[in-house]
Length: 458
Image 1: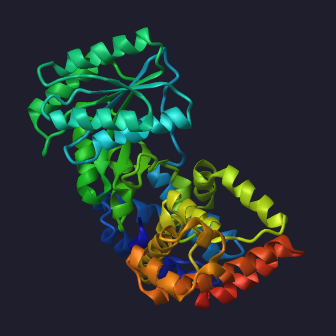
Image 2: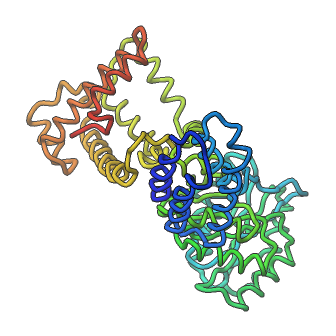
Image 3: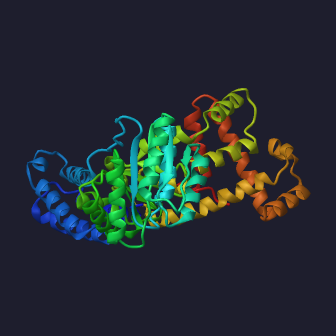
């Protein structure tokens, strides 16, 4: 997300960082470039105009005049205004009501509402330690009810059954009664979507809202629709007292226009980002962290949180103890590391949160990431084709064994040979980690292993 905007803004702001003093004249060209970058990112025109005007007002004012490094101050102003535009701070769900707290999900068909209900249920269960009941009031699509039932089983929350012969209001009310009887903390109500906004749809969801009086009414919208996302959100906001927005399919949106437009247009905060199809691919929306990502400064806090939630600490401790005892880093350990990276959303997700390296083009980096992801999948397939004995002791792998492994993994014999060579390099690095000054030696070794600071070459 934001790759295109980050590229443009990074190049644009580089021109102003060397200035001795900021004046209206020397920031005029930069502001024009900022305006163009935002428009290309599909940010709504009124939002762009207001943003650029606010940056200009602050840049030529006293705030910069007092600064010893006006160029840095200008970048700081752009960042502060981006944060302000997106909401200044993360806004949590307001669930401090008498249980069950009801959350109503609204949105157009195809926006990812039902999938988001499953993700939110998992988020509330695992991170907020809440008991959750989910129910579908979409009486027009039996497949949506079945989908929600499957998702509920997958994430381990209570599913309340419904069918197409019932009325949406009756379904929602019955689910809330059931939640009270079972002392469940939160009820998530999935509603019907349409392919376009229509009066009948709005009247139905307004009736459901009036009957259940939810603590939260979240609008779920596809980020890839750009400005249309913000305009659709405004239409829903006119019909319902929305409390927040969930942007879905953010991982497929390189522009980020919806994230920058939707709060300004609706007056409602973005509360979550849907970052993929998996049930754990839901992130709380932090405007300050997103502003950092847009300006190529990375988002290390989110990366740390993601690591804490997804990395298997038990396996990590086991590997550390094994290395300290002087036992080698075998191919099963190598495979575990690849799987842990995959659990964190893959290489693309990690790179997205790391600060940009000066002058690196994000589009080129994206294609390199794609190639590396493919190589990692190939490596995992090769290791899976080995016997447990071969994984523990790669020296056993002779020419005939290489042919068998290549055949089983759909790769070439040369690929198997390269993987074994790569593993030996990693073994050497792991030995350095356990010795004196381990991390420094490891980073030096890593630099030699990754030509040009890139991914391993195969």
